[in-house]
Image 1 (cartoon, rainbow, N blue to C red):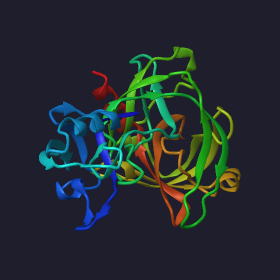
Image 2: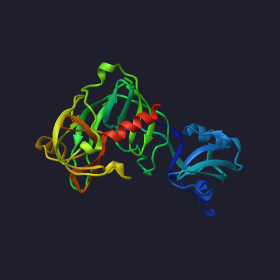
Image 3: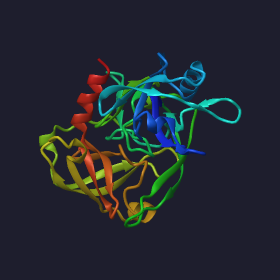
Image 4: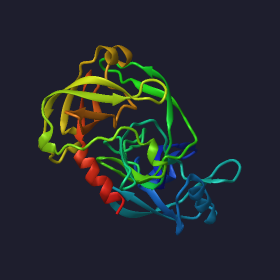
Length: 297
């Protein structure tokens, strides 16, 4: 995925006879700010920002950035490094890649949904502002198990086939247009309305090796009302001994794993309780279906 701007993820101070200096900090920039333009030029990559800083030959450059949903401007005066290249004293990120789980594909509408939560920057925690992106298959090659207080993770290798184009990264998940052949979508299931979801046994479908999902038993311990914190519509506990033995609980990369109950898709895993990795949260599949439709109108 590529960001619609360059996200500030770290600062790099320098020291001179007058003390510590940092042009970005002095201009008022903070970690998590999204730089949209510099010197009147759109910024879509690290290279765009660097090129804009060179235009003023050391004079102040106008920076347009977004913070907390609002846009601001700042005057940044870069300094030159030993080779004469002008720097802002910050590190930015313009792309992101990682392993997550596809929740469902609607082959009729040509849409997909996954994760059940937004993609966020690993350093700042800021939600990733989408410019463009693609989803590709992953071959899962291993698992780092979770333990109380320590998150585990799925490990894998990205394949080159493009399955879909990402059109939305929002609080409820990752959405887009499915472009792969329809026969690749897997098992067809109806989606349960929130009122049909109940406490009790269910299945979690996830992939721990290769590319084939397996079915594991879980227990839904609480069903919410679909309020403001939709990532936590459901509270669940893994009860399957095989899954607990293999992973220690819910691990990174399992977000988006489908939850199936009474033959219907009821939700997706969203978060783990790090202190108790056998427990976690889920979102209603119905919420994700509605958001998928919104992002592909």
